[in-house]
Image 1 (cartoon, rainbow, N blue to C red):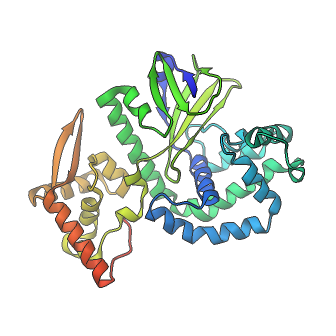
Image 2 (cartoon, rainbow, N blue to C red):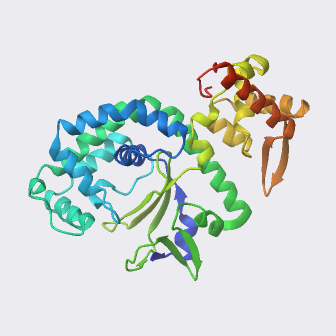
Image 3 (cartoon, rainbow, N blue to C red):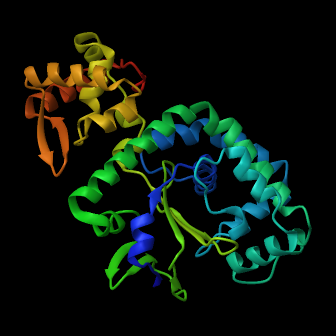
Length: 338
């Protein structure tokens, strides 16, 4: 297994970072795999796969680059520069475009675990990779970035609350498949046999993405050493389809309040609800009070957080309305919005 030696100072300074480039690369991986984790991803793939396939069919060199760079056990490093706090997509993709061609080819040999195909023995690979990511960002991520950012922010809120309840070990154990805290300052990052790395004095960042089930790791050793664990955010947050509000429920409670009730199929804090819905904290608080008074949600304290979830009555209401919509063939088809 691969693991990092993380001293106490590095762990104490670690933080969460949102990255438009990491989100875009996660979407590229999803388009490449063509396998959805939930109905929301299935709808997204149905909408964007045809255009992506046409894009690669028109550019066979880039198509081969993607297949080679997304290796079975290792992603070509130049495709996943370590995210930086506050970095825009344009700033991030510029780092990919400026990668040295000889290094890009070396990274591809590593991801392929073998020789480089003759068609990829060229100097424009970084430019081609950057152009493809710009296509994915422009066509599939940027139009929906505000919603995605709210989901990612809500995930960060949940993880920070988890640190308060169970410490960093509880958070690291639950980040992504193959990642867990081993004790003795060791963080397992995957199940592959790679030499351990020591992060003393380095910067450790945790980066959530919505469109990915496994995530990846990356690091930079130049100047100040920086390490990143890119992980999938909680499924209940990532699944846009799971947050669709039935039209009848919206008519009964009001769309915004009905949206809060739908989200509370899984326990969430008011801050998470603010992040996902885009509503203000005051509005979310008013909806929660009404739903509490109606007996549709309940609250409980978890450490320093207060979590809300649907009661049995709330479950019956949501599922009955959903069942009625499915039987009648009508639903709003809309996801929760501010």
